[in-house]
Image (cartoon, rainbow, N blue to C red):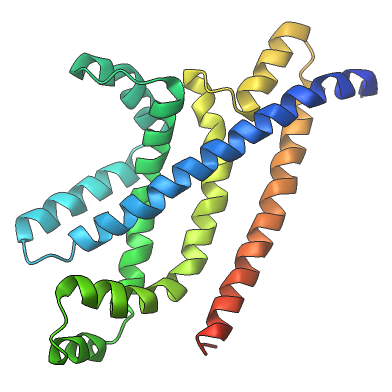
Length: 222
């Protein structure tokens, strides 16, 4: 029989709201790391050094080919053996940031390769340095085509934050498990977690599409 208790629901809701804030913080910080590090990884694969390009490319493929939960365990539990002792929050942010940086680097790479070669030639003719060429000419043109992929991974990183519960980060799933263990009721907390993820993910995805359309209009792109 379906046995939903509204009194219990209202009792646990404040804890889940606090956990939602932790989840959003984890997703935001992890995504911030991924956005910056992903661009660095993408640019590192476009240097004249074949050794550096190959090393970065293999590192990206390794990260993309292994599960996020394994990387979280590795950073948190293996790191101390190399003198890297991190709190669950810090380890989780590093792991999730590294994981999604590998994916975003491929999104950036596609965007960079979509810029016409004539733009490079024009920058060279103007005697612009490599750094100025990238940040003044190439990257501004590469970002609009990359926005859709970047937005998808923003939603993805939010939905992957429950994996941080395996090392004790007090996000939504960790809190729901704790409530269930304390009360032996799992229906309400797990259902509420699903609803919260849905309520946040759907508007975020819609907002990303609107932002992408706005950027394209501002740049005169169809």
